[in-house]
Length: 98
Image (cartoon, rainbow, N blue to C red; front, side):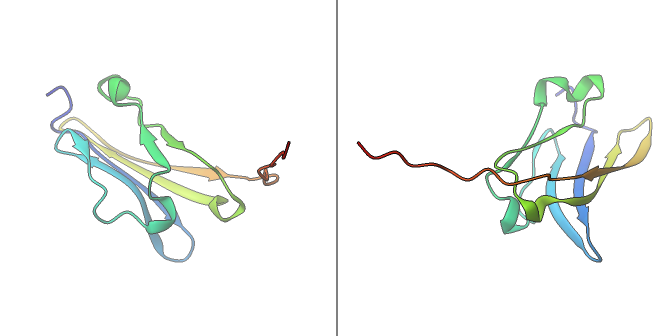
């Protein structure tokens, strides 16, 4: 119950707000998560109490590029931070047949 008052919202800003990841009531809240991010996002739960609101994003693709807003709130502070993600290329899976 370290983070019961912590609220985190990660939103992609591209003319509209795309819900990427939310955390409140001491757990991930993914009911409104955009399907594009389903199964690809994570937080560092053991570090939230220390102020780490970093978002982990797996299987990054070109569509992920853009501007993201992190909204963080506790009983002591509110903060909004913008992060820009640049994707330089896309890694394609390779299949090797015997």
